[in-house]
Length: 301
Ligand code: GLN
Image (cartoon, rainbow, N blue to C red; front, side, top):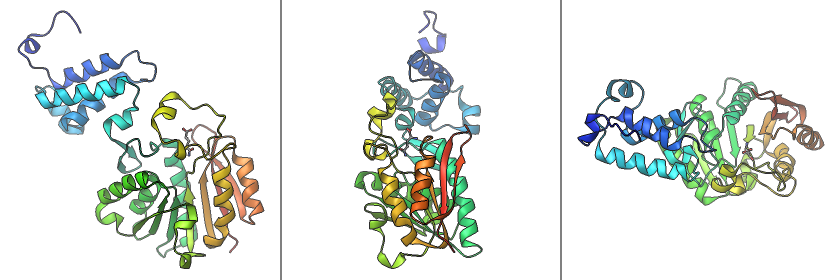
C-alpha cells in the first residue's frame, strides 16, 4: 500500500480498477502466482460481475462494499495456495464456462486438444448420423459437455465413479440448457456404469483417466488441492489404461474410435495395450508443446 493514498480512497471509495491493482500487489511474489495482474483482474471481475465490455466501461467506478469484501476473501484464499480456478469457482474449457472446485480435476488446456482429436474421430466414425459417445471418468464434465455442445444431436454418456465429482458434472450439465438434452450422466467405474445393451454401439470412447504414477512428484498446488483419485490410478500410472483398453473393443461399434489422453511418456505403453486388445490403426498424437498427448485406436470395421 502506498503512503500517499488518492483522495477518493481517503473518502472510503476505491474503483474496481484500483481494487484489481491492490489484489495483484497482494499476490505478487508468491511462488505459485505467475501472473498477478491477470489474477487480480480475474478476481475483481468475478467479485464485481463486470467482464468484457462492462469492465472497460465501468472499471473506473467505485467498488461496492460487498465487492471489496468478496475480493478480500478471494485474495486471502488464493494467498494460501488455493489454485486460482478454485478461487474463482469456474474456469473456461473450449466454449464452456465450467463450475470447478476441489471435487474435480481442473480442466487443462492439453485436454482441449484431446477434444479436437476426439471430434475428428467422432465425425469420421459416425458420418452424417448423430453419433453415440462415452466419456469415462468425466470429472467436471469437461470432455462430455464440450462434445455435446459442439456436436449437437450426439448422444453423450458421461461416467464418473466419484459421487462428489458427479455432482459437479451435473451442475455443469444444467448450465448447458438445451444443448445438454442428449447427455446422460451415470455413476460407476468405467464401462461398468453403462447399460449392457449399449455394448458394441459407441462411435467414440474418450477419457482423460488418472495417469500419474505413485512415485511421480506433482506440483504442490495440484497435490494439495485436486482430487488424488483423478490423478494417480496406482503404482505405475498405467492401471486405468489397462482396464479401459481391455474393455473398449466390446463397447465400440465397428470402426469406432478410442481416444485417450496420455502422459507424455506413456505413448508406447498404451499403444502396446491397444494392439494387444486387437484394436487397429493405433497412433499417438502430440500436443502443442510437442509432447505425446493423445492415443487413438479403432475397432476394426
Ligand atoms: N495433466 C495432469 C497433471 O499432470 C494429469 C491428469 C491426469 O492424470 N489425467 O497434472
